[in-house]
Image 1 (cartoon, rainbow, N blue to C red):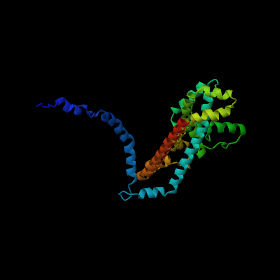
Image 2 (cartoon, rainbow, N blue to C red):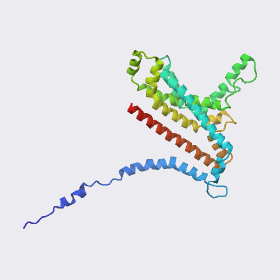
Image 3 (cartoon, rainbow, N blue to C red):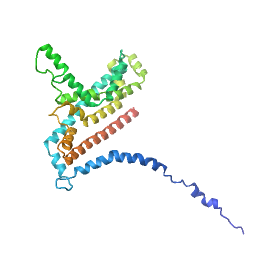
Image 4 (cartoon, helix red, strand yellow):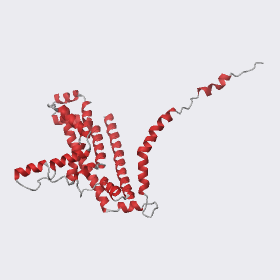
Length: 298
């Protein structure tokens, strides 16, 4: 009679082959998660909690109802959206034109112009507004020149204190955020496509419309979405233009929180601003995914 003796190594083989749980990935992930929670999530949660405080000392939606019912808030929200959309449209038009010129129309000094555009990205926004004040203000250089030529004592140009002045300043400052992605997209465009289209008799406008711009749509969408986000939250340009009648949502948040010290009301407006920005970001992600999938299918 033979006895069957089980090998200890065979019995423990499955346990040895089982993968061991490692905590290293969790430890590496924990620091950036904590940083994101401390920098981004906590301030948003704190603002949301502050917005629920009521004058009676409790919590509820009374502050939201009273703040959103104010006509000044609705006007500020509408003004913020219209200025952001107008500035973004201007940046897209001007930025596309500049990128096409710099990428496809060589001229002496094109590299210098590109460096100047990059320099604007490093400057604070209020410097552009100050420069506009020196140039186009009521006592600026342009009005002084026109006054010397015409003999008039009244300023011929006085648009800085209007929404158009803010839009003009934002277009000047944020256009490089459209130019840079477009130049990167144009640099990856195969020159053979342009040469083939030109050799087949296509006009420059047709080459631009059917060859160049379709390849640049993702970069154009990225630059436009970024500009729209930045102009929605822009405060320095609005503040330094001195446009007292042009109140945007960031300016109203500043007035509520710093001037009148209405922290719950400012928190409500800040929450609305955050919702606007997050909605725009989600819309951009959906648009970018659709454009990318459409390019892959084609």
